[in-house]
Length: 264
Image (cartoon, rainbow, N blue to C red; front, side, top):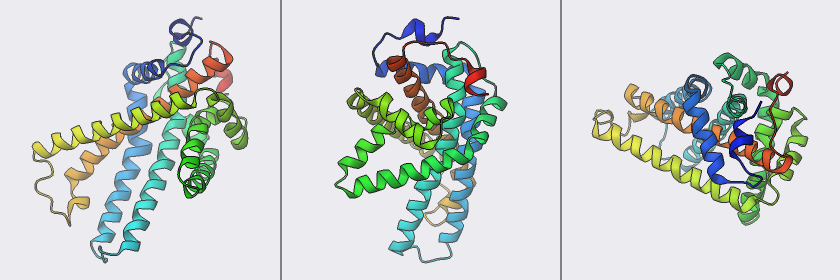
């Protein structure tokens, strides 16, 4: 079967092809992509935000240590959840390349099955990047770019955590400046999306009834952040899976993804 990847992508890495595949996957399979992002990403994040908000209302909110701890914990949890979503959406993305549509249950099963190795990979990724940032920032950025497709490689190829890091290093070699540009572009797009949604909610009066002390506990705020997180996580995760698919086509040649073998 001729794949979308094979018919649309030349033997070169293209940022446009990555974005086209990501938007195509989201548009072709919204139930699985946004549903997974909502269930595994937005809901747990909103619950975490609620309980942290409740805790901060009865503690010293001016505590610098407490604020830093909450920020770090939020980032780690958000990253872990994003990795689980990304793992689930690898199936949806590769199915789209094969002109198929993976079901919600198939994607969810893939993410949950790979949960333990994904968490292990994420923790190692965080530690490695943090160590790199301690060494004058630049090494941390380069490590992030080098390992940017370790998660989809782990899910799709199932060769183990360290093999996934090695595979990502191989796939990104020769395209890391373009990948850096892509990641910066994705960051800009996600930021703009968050700003636009924030403006819509603010002008619509959704947040006007909440004060600074009760904002994190406001139902409207939790709903709005759940919607925002669903869109951001779905787009970001699908884009990373699409990046893996594009790099794999570039390095290994256009191919037909046998999902029965990949996800057996």
